[in-house]
Image (tube, rainbow, N blue to C red; front, side, top):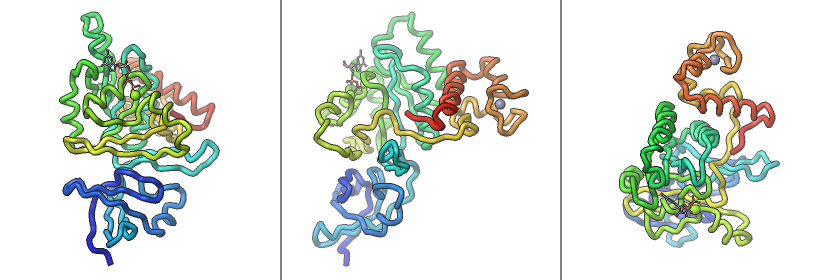
Length: 317
Ligand SMILES: Nc1nc2c(ncn2[C@@H]2O[C@H](COP(=O)(O)OP(=O)(O)O)[C@@H](O)[C@H]2O)c(=O)[nH]1
Ligand SMILES: [Mg+2]
Ligand SMILES: [Zn+2]
């Protein structure tokens, strides 16, 4: 018989042991899972993942601690076990916000990359926020128009755009406040400032982000498990070492427009219910794009993603 039960969040997984943290008491327990979970999620390699909210029974010995219930997930991100395999691997669950760190230059992040990322976030049902970093480099007035055009494009599509500077400290306190009590994930190209930003938000947290730590760990671990780090102000930061970008997701071409909120809001006005918004008569989306109601770059990204799908049958990030 269990002595007691705890409710908490899985903050670490080794594949056989799961660390459960009760965020209220701060208590942590290493637990195993019951065979029943292993059997049930037969298509995924790990039935319990970081971010999962669980209930665990705590026994007399650590070896008796067992996770007995997993709460329904609000969302999760996956990775294929291998390119050839259809088996998917859930790597983290219950993410409140994914922050996409981008830079206008040094290095430039393309709108196409951003749009693909946002589509994936929509498909995963994870709210995405764009962090426009290195704003200290673009303080001169001549950049204002470019910055506003960028921000307007994404705000018009329904996304928040926060202008920050990780190295100058601009916008960091507001971001930390926003992350309080939430589970956050950071993504973005190498060199945009993710590590700098995380260090500014939470000094002392040494996440395995970026190319350098990836290099150090190469060869040591064949499998990398995600980890989720408690933040000192409350909330969590998910680190998914070895995951470039944000996983991948299959979307049928006729569904793609759903994941572009700024296009999709016009789709109800199209003549054909299965309109692909590429060539059909009386297409309200094309009309809106033609009138500048949809940012050109967004519509172009949509077309490019459709084209890729013709070639590959799926989207990859
Ligand atoms: N000027 C400027 N440089 C930054 C800023 N944030 C990061 N950097 C620099 O950009 C480079 C890449 O940063 P890093 O955090 O390693 O990027 P990561 O690959 O996304 O983790 C480093 O030289 C940082 O010092 C910023 O806000 N302004
Ligand atoms: Mg880094
Ligand atoms: Zn249409």
